[in-house]
Image 1 (cartoon, rainbow, N blue to C red):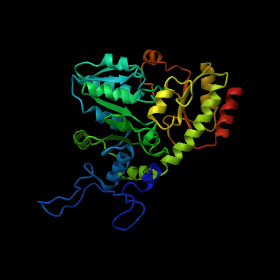
Image 2: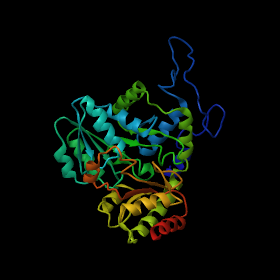
Image 3: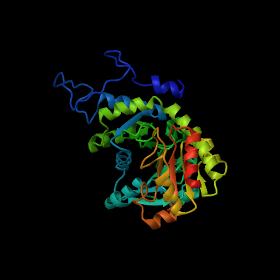
Length: 378
């Protein structure tokens, strides 16, 4: 089946008991057993729930994996994945990683001895140089958050395999509609499902997807043991949101292209970061590994005063944390997604005080451009 058909018919879409086209919400904490010797498939809802299972299977299938795991947030998925490693292990991580990931690595996992080296992951040689005997994984984002840097995932995964280490990719910006890292040789795909997968700014959730059965067993044990699972109500909402993923991504991406091109022509904008622009440094690599540039872009304004004015006076795009909703969202990384990163670290990575991130929603492109133009011109 093609991707759009998979979204509607690829998983557990019809309730076998009643024929309902909407899978039931199994709002329960436990399941009755028939006998002491033969337990059923489900016993306690932390360990398994039919609604959650349907969602996990759907996301795994879309990513080309064999097993999916739904968590209570994107950070729960990321942190649970880090529990695969032990004190003394070492990770190589892209330097402009999401601020929440930076925070959990440098302030929590560092306390129990997990070591990290941040590198410019657009340079495969820099990744190779950072690998040590105790390195256990590469952790990547492509495009990265918030600078939209592109890593050659196929090349990075091949390098990781040479050293017998894992490749973990946060695929939140792209979704499986536009990019499938497992098909490029990567081992674990992560999502903040809060964003495009759910797509309606009403659920906090996260996912991990793998293809290797042994890795699936390890992650499944962590999910059950650590317990940061997604509840059935939220699972049902994400299942509903997934059905429109393709049309939402196509529409938002088409508008993002137009907005990025328009911004690049404005004198008040010093630079636009979007892999859909031909002058983006990672444009060619991204086109080889993804089916489109996505609906998120970042740009820098000429001054802090103009940046503040834009964030506070724009009307159609919400000035808010997060991305990937049906509404456009303007975020300010220095005080939002990357506020946990020390100012010197942000500056070293190029996350300036005039950098703005725009997640393009489903508004009309002409209206979004007119709204941005009104503020910039004023």
